[in-house]
Image (cartoon, rainbow, N blue to C red; front, side, top):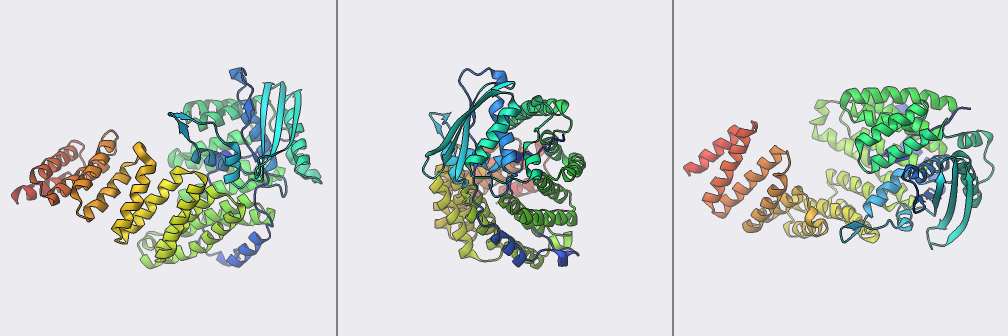
Length: 535
């Protein structure tokens, strides 16, 4: 029996993205048709989130992959259940990262109910695993996210991994009121995930390694997973994602693998994999400069997602459409301000749809990202008040859910917006809010921006302090151009302050660094230094 394997949702990042005007535009869905299709998705709010599975204390280290393997397999199956709407792993990983907190420098245990809540899930399925793959026992708890009350619990096993996961699938669907699956849906959902549980094991270990940013360990486990089942698509497509990061040659290899996988997917009639591969290919060919091909993939994904009434599919397709629209078709268009504005106006149509639909999904993490993109487009179109309101709403959402990193980013963007508009007091207030949230982790860019605002206010002492803090952080890295820019700003500010010696010393330091690193800025900086000496 063929094994309908999926692209791992945890490796699809939902971008805020794109649509293009190509020669075949007349055959595309109109904006009104897309709106009508979105309206037909009666309840896009996720029905279930699978998260927080754990091993019992004392579990052998060799078996700690099992909770991840169970979650990945259950998540794959639930994503294919009509009307259930399962939250993809990527959304849960993003939420967990954004809500992460520490106490005395140590990470706190995740609040799984809060994580499920911020992505909009109505129910969450958690579990505890004991035993090993051939004799697995699984305790399940289905919880109502709204009030935290347990809806049902059960214990399954002991038994083989695949048998226990099958029973867990049936129990969960029964508790969620899912009945009447077609024979094709039954075949797709209950076919063995792989030819061997070892393939699932090493794939789960690869997922764990990727989350821990252990690249070599991830690659080793991917190779092992594929070795046990050369047709196991989660590992194959995760490998394609890895290939895509290796520049043009890697992207070409990834595209070849994805196209081969898609042919198998169509034979097995797995619409979910078909949709995800279309989205992946769209991103890859767009990154390769093939705008028309990306446009084709984006529209194909949109039509499939609307046909299946898949909320996560339509949000990903809308994101891709936005990015395609914003991509200039040629160099002349890239340098044409009117053409750029026209692209932004068209992209805004789809971005507005995206924001409105995500609001219906109640996913506040995704909404904050969508609002950010929408605010940038509004700013580009000169709609300043609406742009500022978008940034302020992002900050409000972040405060409500306790996402400090999102809140800090919101304050930074709002501060930069106020700075560009000449509202320096408002800019400084916003940027200081960002600095407070960032603490010791404040990026050099933030310090530089605060310094620029202080310099514009003729607060030279404060500006120099910020520039010096930025330079101290940059000097331990390898971004020489950023170091040169920072040293130059310090010198210019000291000169404006009237500290001639300090300005000359800092500019000389910049000249020496540029010469040592053979920077193209060396000649220009030397010329400026000599001009300053003659004054």
